[in-house]
Length: 171
Ligand SMILES: Cc1cc2nc3c(=O)[nH]c(=O)nc-3n(C[C@H](O)[C@H](O)[C@H](O)COP(=O)(O)O)c2cc1C
Image (cartoon, rainbow, N blue to C red; front, side):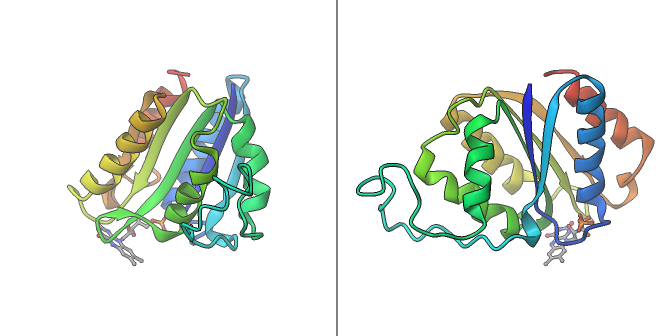
C-alpha cells in the first residue's frame, strides 16, 4: 500500500522520530511504499477558515506554504500514520496544523487505513490524542489499524518496536 507518515516532533532523534522510523522500516520490509515527512520542520500554518477552498479555490488552499508539498502525497496516500509527541495532553501543534489543513480535501481520496504513534513522559496522558485520532478516522470512514504509545520507560524498546511491527502486519 501507499503509506504516508507524518512525524510531528521537533526532536529529530527523539522518541516519536524513532517510532516513525521503525514503522517505515517494517512497512518497507513488507513491500509497502512509504513516504515519511517531518512536518515539525516544515512551515505549515493553521487553517484560516476562509473557505476559499470550498468556493473559488475549487479544492485548493489559498495559503502557499509547505503544505503545498504535502497535498500531492495526501492525494495518493492509502494509509496515513500520525506520529506525534504528547504536548499538554494532546497531539503536538506541529501535527495539528497539517491535519487541520486537510479541510480543503474533505478526506484524502484514496485513504483506507490509519494508525497513531504517540510518545509522552507520563502514563495515562493519551485520551485527548486518541480521541482526536479516532474522531478524524471515523469522520473519514477509514479503518483503524491501531495505536502504539510509548511513555518514558517504553521508548526505543524492543517491546515498542514489536507493537509497531504488529500494526504494520494489519495493513
Ligand atoms: C511542550 C511540551 C509539553 C509536554 N506535555 C506533556 C504532557 O502533557 N504529558 C506527558 O506525559 N509528557 C509531556 N511532554 C513530554 C513529551 O511528550 C515526551 O518527552 C515525549 O517523549 C517527547 O517526544 P519526542 O522525543 O519525540 O520529542 C511534553 C513536552 C513538551 C516539550
